[in-house]
Length: 392
Image (tube, rainbow, N blue to C red):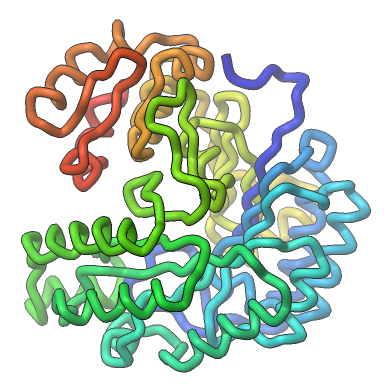
């Protein structure tokens, strides 16, 4: 079964809701940065850390956003001092998301000395016209400069985020992007198809008929991604994630992953608990999901007044929780080993979800093996549709 009430939580997510400018596709809660509010946010975040520290022994920490690298040196120093005082540092994997426009050598060295050992850099594209279309604040050259700075500062675990099916992006341009990304030699690549979320400029452009979605082209780009990364020595371990390191053993009784896989994200996909701090962040601890309000001003006020900034709380019934865990876990290439799923959830996939697995297998989108169920290559491409079947 999942962790007992006595065991501290080992995974921490921190949402930094500030950006230099909001990107045209982004539906995450974030806002253009303001110096005074960022100062208040850092103070409030430290208060929230103090509230949960007794139940935290982090193995992984992930600062996401927004743009965490927008925090200045003094603000990072405050956070590091607080983490050390609360005995939350010294983790196995500590990731910070960076925008190539906000990386300096001083900041990179400070992050590294503070215990951060993994950087996730939002590249999205090497094509200037597409970067402009997405509303990114960085240029192609900034990617190269920032990557060199990170290496110089001692980072030996770097992820590059890429996007495909961007309006105006051809298959040839996508191939060039993949070639440039692979040539940089990062330890990890994550690549996502553009999603058109309401209340974003890109969605409005789609609705206005400025461009059309080409699903066949998106599928061809995904195939190119899988093939190109494999040839370059990356191992696909999740729908959109590719890592270097030893190749996973497909016959292993548990789900082995390449050594440079993102351990923080693997915890999500395996249904593990985590604390989420910051405005709009979600916490999932021992079957209870809570969410902080999506308002930085209100978040700061609540914590300054000694209150919790939680906006909603949901406790899933055991079967619903197991179904959600099944759905998330199927995003991993290894699928779900039956025994591991039973240990995590207390349920057996072969009884409660037998019909769903059979349906996917008959469609060619899944495989029922003696020890596990996993999605096929086509099934992974449409993992979200497969996941819907497993929700209860």
